[in-house]
Length: 121
Image 1 (tube, one colour):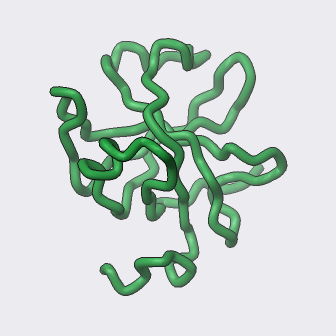
Image 2 (cartoon, helix red, strand yellow):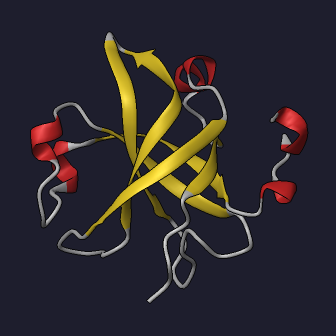
């Protein structure tokens, strides 16, 4: 079983331009791993830079690799689903993804030198 990274860099990588305007690329703390009916690698991350999206203040997100055979924590960047958490009571196991808001795709970096904004921090 792959060890979870403590920190990841998360950036927007999608076609949701409104989300792109409000979500700053940032370092996130990985807090917990959840499983759902179809996947066992959903991660709860705490944002370093919370943001407002559609009148909701977001301090945490759920992310998971979009690619089969690739997981967050590998050396190479990974394309991810980004899900908003409208209500923290939804964070139960198994995680019901249908209750969360799939808002965009993003890229996760655990090797911070590979990020396109590596000098950001």
